[in-house]
Image: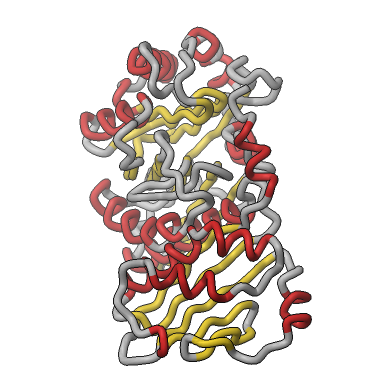
Length: 389
């Protein structure tokens, strides 16, 4: 992977998880970087979310490091705020950097007290292990119920060269972004001010993580953080940079949907012909979140009525008699009624690891949207029934 210049990465096992695998990671910019972030809108928010927001404000959008732990969400605990700050202070002291330039993030079980000493005691070792080559180690260390690490990269062309963008993400369940994401960390060597980074981040998230849902649950720890350290010396065209950032986030969103807890199939929902893009997104979200649609796809059952019904309760006025539904490219509903198709042929197509659903509205509307989700299987229940114990 072609990574941006000026960053180093590290991970190790600090003893937060019961299973012996890396559970603490650090992303470090060698120079002070501009930072932009979006966080969960859940009213219940983890201590690292609250502290990262506070640090970003105090540092006026500048940061040096992102500290992430897995195995404990540091949320809904008596000592959470104190623990998050202690961990940031340990990193700041070791780096000789302002504590406000250290951004914390956590993932894991909610409501379990987090002992800071395994983290703070490992900070010197963590920093000693920093290397530009350990990006993949961070991706692996932040996993919880994920089955594979998630990484993506892209370039933004500039008249004098390229700026590079790379991101890691974790997430397989409790995924329903709402002005946020799961955990995602993006680094770029572009020279951008914090406000420029923010202006690129908001629409990029809107067309990636806001088009993603696994189970309709918005986490208490959701955070997407982007650092831009200017190491390339290039100030990219803002439109091209936003396109490249969107590409990275969309790659990660698809990987999360594909790796949904217990999932066997990636589902892509397209809506066309809606009154506007916002309306199309609401309809696509409704279809993607429907347990009945998701279980039908898991069972390889072309139950198009569930798709039409889910579109109908999205809260967007439309005439069902002007709607067609396609599954795996085969029209199964025409003008709101059953269309002739081969059940056997479609069943074979539904045996593929990816499923495409399209809701086509006919009229004057030009709104369109794409949404990613996955099927619901018994595996999702097994993963979540014993997650804490």
